[in-house]
Image (cartoon, rainbow, N blue to C red; front, side, top):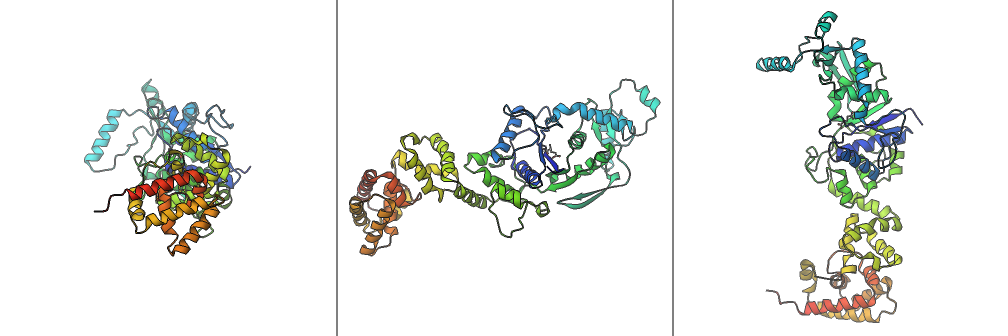
Length: 492
Ligand code: GLU
């Protein structure tokens, strides 16, 4: 194993957002491609918004994506993994406070006794004078006797921002430079004794020996403070990579309210985890093989190279995602696909228990090349189970109101009755012969008969589905179709 150690540090305050998922995928690929360690740390210190069930959702989403962590909290009966835990930030409070104490002792932090009222008044003065609100440094250099004289008065601990500049060589954003005087002496422990995010994240990354902090670019300005804290605490400063966020199809930040913001919406919509892994990385990374888009997880691990992480935000493209999902479906083994489809069919009320395994595998095979999502299996196969309950209006207009359609349907019925071997190949041969002998295109036969057999315009290949329906049922449906055409009201 290499020294590379990366982490994701999601806050369990809601569902697992696709932005978080993208960050997770990139960290995971980085770790796996470098033979490093991937750590999951739950930043659950916001006691009001964090909930254990949200933590479970994060773990579940990662499991679904196929992202396994080498170190992380216990989950679903699995014990905590790793020696540098605990991996729930709420359980690390003593470590954070101990490190804050160390900063006080080394003179890199100080106790601030300013009351909320004083700070509010200072803020209002700044506003009135149109100055940015800043801490005025009142307690920065309090003599020891003044501090002693405060007795048990509550205090915050503030970090003493050093003079000079902070320069970050970000792996994605390039060199970012700030003058330290732009920063206040910021609070690292609140007067109620709670460590602040900046302290907690740096102490955790430092003690967990994280070598690369790869996260959303909403944390870029925080990273300047973090770097100062890393240095003051004497930890090795990790490399930083701040990734652009995921944008929706209109180029706006992917809102939490949008369908699909929750990674697991895609699972519910019938997308494969391998598709999402593939798609999410493409939102922020370009492979060196120009134009290539389709990757299995293993291929991604081989191809991933952090130097090709992009600086501009990836815009969500549903068409591309659908296409990619179709490709991933085609790459599955028929057995694995069938296994993934059966629960979806059962949930939709299709009684798959009435079919044997060979039938179900064949059904899978004839749909594998066609369905864009797993959920499409339901409209693609429900007619096998439910019969034809109605005929879609549009294809009825298009196919069943054509000149000569009854003659063609009748001819097909005869052909079906006389085909000796009820297989897709034999059916195709006999329909092709009909089309040639009657001098009419094959579509004039297949489209109206598809409607009779399935009630729909779209579905698996006609000859294949007819084979699976069986001769008697197919013929019965053809007869019903013909009767329906004959009973159609003349068009106004
Ligand atoms: N808990 C932070 C968040 O969810 C992550 C901070 C980090 O990755 O450093 O935004």
